[in-house]
Image (cartoon, rainbow, N blue to C red; front, side, top):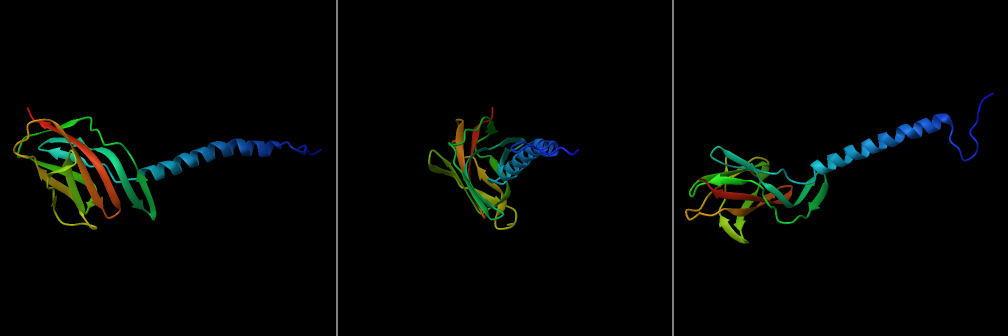
Length: 163
């Protein structure tokens, strides 16, 4: 005799299917979120001077990818590690994707002018450079504003006198 589920109860096969469906749905949601999270903003640049290199701290950004736009609001970036530099030394910022323009400021004022390196690719330059001012004597945090074809981003980098 074949067993049929009573009204309001699941059959054994349906119960096993639902037990399997929950972890699969959860995994799908996690993977979908991970895909969105990686596309939600510009890559975080690396900043180097001589052989020293640090990763900038990420701040607020707006980014468009695959027809979807996303803006992430954040507090001012607070870099953990300082890049050791000397007055007059060139510092290179590698954005990992072409940027159309870059502004470097300190305390809301233009600190130095950044210039691009190499040839333009896909609407901008990946690497930019600035020279540490001759009067540099104290550690300071700089804000780097980058403007990309896909949006914009704010990053922070701390520079300190090389001892």
